[in-house]
Amino acid sequence: LTGVFPQLGGGQGLDLGKAKARAMIESFGGRVTGSVSGRTDVLLVGNEPGMSKVTAARKQPGCMLVSLENLCELLNAGHMLPAKGTAAAEELTEATKITSFSAGYWYNGQALNATPAQLAYATGAHLNSGSAGKKKKPKELGYW
Image (cartoon, rainbow, N blue to C red):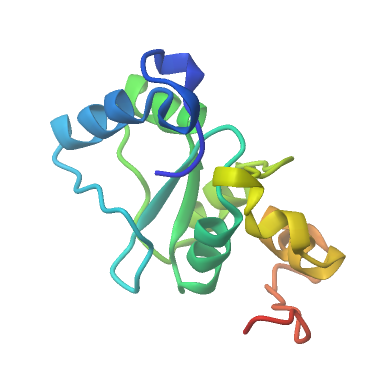
C-alpha cells in the first residue's frame, strides 16, 4: 500500500484509509507487506503515493501497480487480478495514473529532490512513450 485512500475514510494524515484497504485485501486472501520486494505481485496505489515504493515496484519484473478504483472495478465485476507478467497485468499498470507524490514525513519525500527523468520513470511516462510496447528504463536516474 502506498498513498492515502480517502475513499475508504478513517485515519489521519498519511494513514488515511490504509487500515481499511489492508483489511479489504486480507479479507480476499491477500497478504499486505510494508515494503516492495521481488516477491511483491501488486502495489495498491492511493492518492499521493510514495515515490520510493512506486519506483521499487516499477523495477520489479511483473509487479502490477493498481489504483483502488481499478481494484474495486475488478472485484465488483467478479474478476480476479490478472496473472503476474501478463499483457493484462501490464495494461492494468499502465491504466494506473500517478500525477503527484507524497512530500513524506517532515517533507523528506524522494520526489522533492528527484530529477525530471526520475519523476517520469516513477509516474510511468516511459510506459506510454510510443516504443511499440517495449518498456524502457532510463539509464541515468541517479540512484540506481
